[in-house]
Length: 505
Image 1 (cartoon, one colour):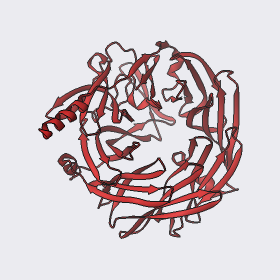
Image 2: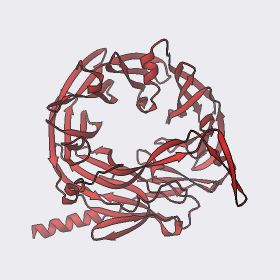
Image 3: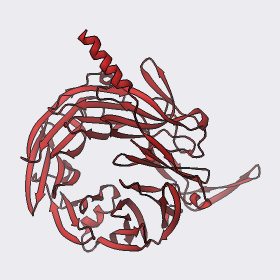
């Protein structure tokens, strides 16, 4: 009787629908939208939304536009000039202003700049955050060439950080700015391990409760690998060594929740692939001690056998997200992908030809670019004590055949945590066969839907149609989603048309 009652409860919870409001702005028609499709978007918890549209010519940024919206409808566009070789690194809304974080390279000088546009007054201002020349410091100049590690974190204050290799020692430079962008303090944070730079890997920097936490991974040998977490406060540092089990290779992510620094992901005993299960570390930031650490083998037989001889050639997995609830239960989401390559013919034409009335040319210096096509998801839930509660495999197959380069289809996903469950946004047509979900892609919008796939606290998976794409003039790509508290914005685009979607959960 108790078992039947438990099954009914679990089934009821797994079948609960989700509550959301769907709002769409007006469809906007504008030929200027053809300039570049690579918008960066930002929103805030008040419902404000902006789009940053770069204007590139032959791969080079030539100014950018700040496009403003009100009540989901486009209002006006402001053009901002750029100088030299410029990259847009990040955009965000903060205190009623739209900010654009830029890197400018002029000759042998690299500058990090923060432009701002007041949403109400439309006043434009610019602030230099950092600048360095190659002659001044070649190691920092070299470090800033890599956009991936330049991070700007927005909280009560603004934190700029980036890792640097100097004399084969890996360290991180952190700069704290006030709300009005005045520099307050600068820190240089290094691991205590005095090893070769090849054995030290920078992982992340986070700021919490006016303290800076920097995470490194130090690999000495197969039997001596550890994470080093460094706490910096008031020019004082404290280091915590977190031992990794012998002969383990871990793919992790990290997050701070309720004064706990959580490191979690999957582990293997070989360098690539062959993952065996989940790994978990819980550091109490109040005492700066390791509360618990544990490696758990996969419970789900599908997950257990998924990695056996499966990782070949260009297939891999990312630890896409980790989510932590107030009870310090951790949800890990890993997404599999296939890396595909595409050659772009750029350069000067060296020969021309014609065929059936069409003219063409052959170019030199082709550029080969790569992109990821995502499919299946691995999801696990870990208790606060570090033990694995359940794991599940969401096999969203038949997406790897789609290159996602068309405005009319979308194989990407966006994962978030709301209503105590995992939510996964995705476009396509879903068929359920033998307990597996098959996501089929189709360029005809009337054949596809915009879904929210939910994974409840017990690991149950259900599909929910948010709306059909049949009457949509644009496709709202899941990967373009941005979330602020319980509000999600997606800027859809296609056929010289744009439309803003807002979901409230």
